[in-house]
Image (cartoon, rainbow, N blue to C red; front, side, top):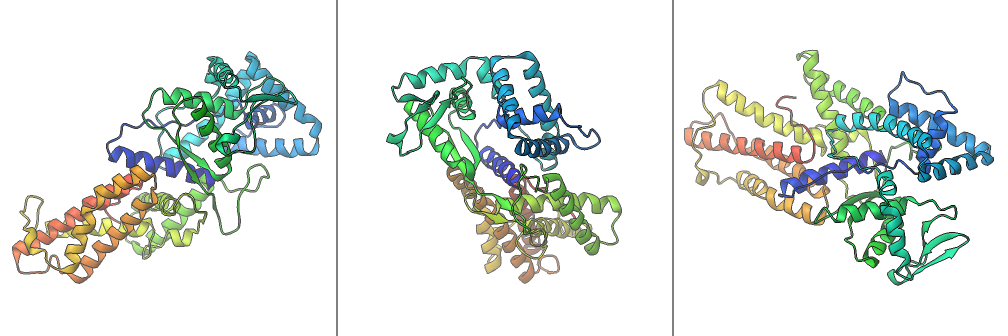
Length: 439
């Protein structure tokens, strides 16, 4: 769920920024040189890889086995250290082994992201910055600041002037670089190509991201804006890959979609199977995305699928159902021959409190998007979408739309329904959630 929150926050912010007029490139920064990849590479040569499973799931299996093995036999950790030294020195066999491990993991990850309506424009690899010499150059720049010292063979950077008592390790005693060093080179490269950089990082990266920004500032380089998010847990407790106690994103999505199907089947038993499957996928993915994004990133949250799938409450299904209801109203009006899209509206006729409130809420969309883009707080849009759905339902509950004699008023109210439909659809799309026309 932590990885899901990272991806959903990032994707939603991208959609918001694009809606606000920014030209955005999304990048999935691939850690292909770190200790975790070294462990996976080692694991693939020591344990059987289950090709019948989704590739990233099998990677997780061998990774868990490897950590258990390394915990039981600490002397084998030296083999991992050796692999990290070899890959940084450019050993072709080790590079190939690491690349194979990364590709297996990425193939599965991309499949899951696509399932969640998430797309990345590029996948820069951290090894690129080692091979290009960018990491070596930035280490030399850091040395030139006069703030480094060697402690037990490792190169350390003093950032006390920036409020960090803990020194930042720039280079290990064995000469290998660290994730942070490669990250500095990556951000230098990004800063040369963008006016604004945004990182989405878990709360466990708070210290290191602060040190990274301080180092970039020290070197006179552009700093990223960092969105720190707390992790999501399930009611049963938190999850950990290293200890082998976790539920994969795919397993969670499967469970939520199954529960969504039960709900859709109960509400629309007369509909064909393919309709129920399609809607349950939309509702399930929407429920997960919305439940993740509705809470401010810096707050921890517990995912509860029963609450997330509540059609009558404050989750994505409620907003999706409001959109479907608007579509249904317009379809019925068209079938009865009392409305079409070219009918003229007379806004002066919309004087009921619920009508005025709905108009005000729809009019706020652009300012909400601009606010979210400026503050990088996507949960504000999630709250807005729910409030918009509530305003639409209040309007429909208290104001007759089709069954009225005044043709101009009817056409105007149906036009208002159409405006609400469009604004609901755009709001959902900006949240990365599908807008079913029928549910």
